[in-house]
Length: 190
Image (cartoon, rainbow, N blue to C red):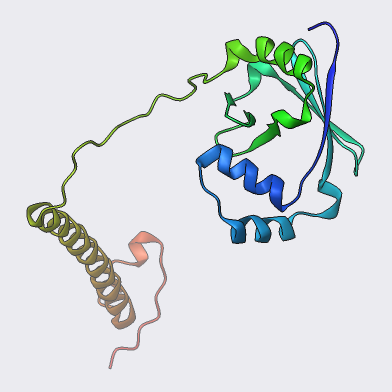
């Protein structure tokens, strides 16, 4: 791909519907409309330029340009009606095939093919066939009760020690030993 491919798109509620349908297979018109209302007017018109190694995303309203290298994308998905370019696991750009000329689409598809469906994160754990039973619930409650009980005993012990220390200091039972520690205490012996 020696030449640059440029497409222009505008973000509106239909674009958002298409984007989230391509990303998760869900059509929620109310969500798309509320999301559309929340997007600022200066974040609507974009010009995207593709070359050999990167995608340039130019915000026409703000005259800002972001550069994304294909290898640095979190993932690139080719869906039935467009490309999904994931910057991270939640932020993505959706570009419909309708925006491209057929020959440009073929060139871009060949360039992006090595990056499709790139595996980025290996799941740390997978829970399969997990069943909630009364035994598991009771075990969880037992651990919760034990931890709360231990915490309450620690708090009560701290309060008791604090109360005893203040009581002895106030009544000056330790008045004979405090001067040896360098603490002067005026006591009222009644």
